[in-house]
Image (cartoon, helix red, strand yellow):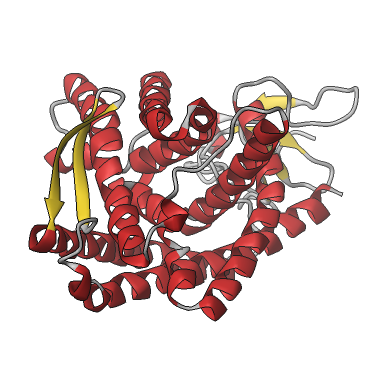
Length: 372
């Protein structure tokens, strides 16, 4: 049964990754096209981009208008394009390699994790918003949908980068970097932009703090109902920032905000992207359940086994030093009846390299078989 559920999750993951790539590339094409679309509107009064600081409520500093707004927009397109290039360069080859070599493994690649988390957040945010609306929480928009397309382009692309700079960089990247620097002086300066962080207690606190700031920053315009959805999205973007880098949180924000612009320009394309987003939303149900179980197991609230009898968990002997979980690197396993191992930390099931042969010690002696 567990194998079938895992297969369902992997198939759903493959579909989700494929759709996410389509939506990202479509949004990137629209962003590039917008460089030609926007110039005729530079003389309009609402052709403006706001600059502010987050304290945690936004405090307006100034507006860039006209040609200055357009120059800033060119910079935004360049940042988003560079982020997407890095995202694809690191993620696509790795995912294809994993898909061809181990199509049903328990190991997620960065592209797969990004896509699954996006789908899960999309489902959770929509579910919470519907629940709040049902409970009379005063769910409302801020009228962006009534604005001309060029105004949407300016504001949504600006938010994709500027909010990451004002929140994730200032309230997460810098504190995490300073903390790491205090522990070890051999931290390169570019780690301030995230990537390759181990998520420990301090990092979790910083992620939650930055997510709270992100949520509070949206309440003046949207109302308090907006705090919970943005807080949840902020947690995931904070995790992506530390785990893979700022360009991952920018891509998450860009996909969240900018994907609808294609529909503003072409209703037929908007229908297709809307259907694809709905498929991702439905797939988010699977990933919400999957990641919830993983979180519960990670914090030790439930064990990796099933049934009344507790599984036999033993520390891997030092002689089997090469046996590690391919998903999390753990060395504490449950020994299953079919000779496979189940990681006690993340629940991944795999067949260790010593199965089918007698492991050899450094002296050439045969080591004892794994525990029954």
